[in-house]
Image (tube, rainbow, N blue to C red; front, side, top):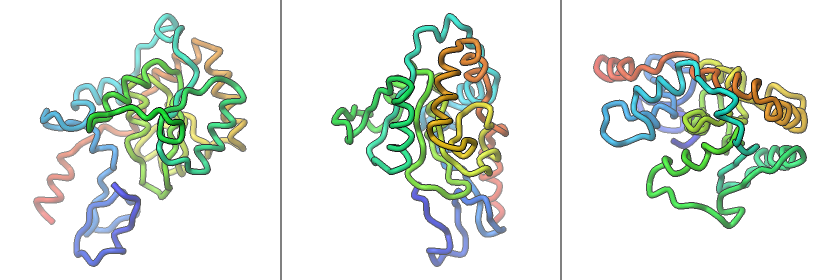
Length: 219
């Protein structure tokens, strides 16, 4: 799952997250690894739950979100963008922080399911990546939406190939972290607007692992 390019390795074929590919490389989105495609117990959600939570329109009502707290972030790497966005959000509301920089990392027992449970009580999840490259979109937005939390993310405009911009706040769409934070605060105060955004489907297209299996078979 590292953010590396196939050309760094001497291999005839490759499976990467890169959007710009050729016939010898298959783009398999990294967040596909979060789906338990064949009910093996791997991944954080089976296919049916993935479709229900990420593809179908949500059903949140005001009474469902009334007691959600403002924002949560969970990370171990205090990468600069994360800290800048965190500080901007803290000007508008309380952000509960978990991870080694905050001295309160919680055990996940080899799974992210505990993390998703933790996210459920929050309207927003600050979850930018450690590093950036077109197509490198990991589990972060998926975890947030599965938990009923709006991702506050950072990714290039090609993100729309995988994820719908209406379902998140992307720093690239704002002049500054402060402008994004003000929008988050405005949405949080307006519970009907919050429900509308939570109900937006995350996925731009329905996930299909069979396309990958076909590539493996015939390549």
